[in-house]
Image 1 (cartoon, rainbow, N blue to C red):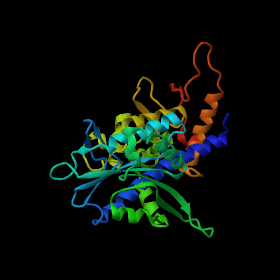
Image 2: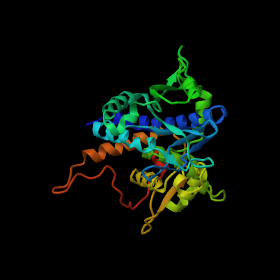
Image 3: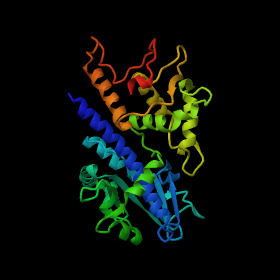
Image 4: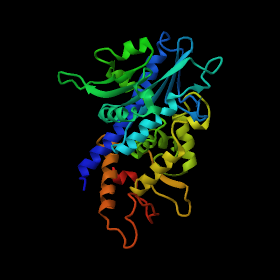
Length: 353
């Protein structure tokens, strides 16, 4: 059985990986956006249609050379350790590798486009091994052709005992057919963004299309959304708000990227629902009787003495251990990691912190 410390460390690690992946996406977006000589168009979650007739939304869509060439970026904040599941992720890349239409130019087509798969340095070796295996199949030979590449990233502290961080993006496999981009990514040091840029990108606090770990959404709600419900005349109090109210406020802080439709909203309603249910299970918020879609939330939430991700992850890990140790009922499967039921008395978030 995993220890409390191990669970907490994994929880914090997942939070940071997701937050850093968002920063990497934003970093590549800003680098390409400010270099007109590289890209004529850079869009996040732009909708295209592939030759299978399916709509796709790559994380990043780039058009070059008078919008006659394209690049599609797919970002993964985490990849499975299971060989079977990792193979499935690699095979999913094919939907981006086939010809696509509805590009942002006059005829909706490009001469060709490349695919860039971006993952963390801890996942890259397993990913490359799986790519080598899948590429042997005829339908996946694009994995060994020019126009498919794997980029990887890491957050590195500077030498000399300094505490400054650097975001480093490097090419791990393959190459694009864009010479300028290749020269940029294949520098001996890779593409480096200093700490001040990384801090700025993190502060934008956006989401990728991939579902975040629940602790990430909880922290987003605490830091950015809940305070918007506070009435200056009431001050610190317990407020009754619905999931829909929280979602509408969240959409203001995490709006659509560029295409104004519901599919591109950065934060999804189901992510918020999961986070609220987890907070209720941890006694961080309450719930009115007979109001399944309402919540009792202490606002403002007090600051923690330790980093908020550590405080939230400690609570989540303790709860996980408690559930894991609970004996299963006879004749029924073991209970799920989090159970939700109304408590007769609500415990304030300040009691936890």
